[in-house]
Length: 85
Image 1 (cartoon, rainbow, N blue to C red):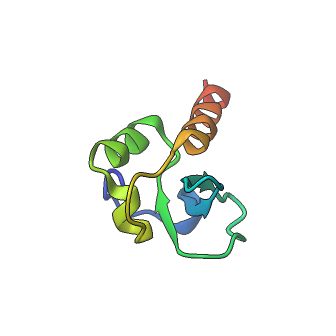
Image 2: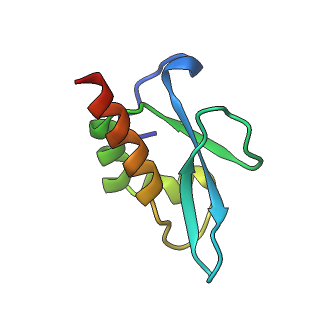
Image 3: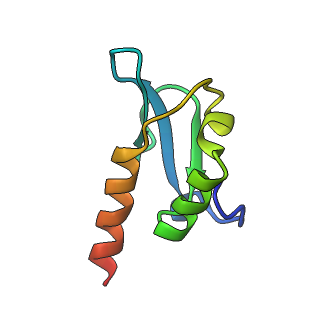
């Protein structure tokens, strides 16, 4: 979704949009690929996530109108990047 490079499912992180109440929709990581709803996939790297955010790819890929909060995905990817160092 971010860098548009093809990869196997195991290499990608699935994200889904959930209604977090108060009229806010949030993008959350779904590493187990079990959450219901439409999902989108991206590489779990800060660079790929930054491209997806810059291109505003989440609303398009998840077919959600309006802004999406992406804080939980950003924290998840940052945590993975910290583990790899």
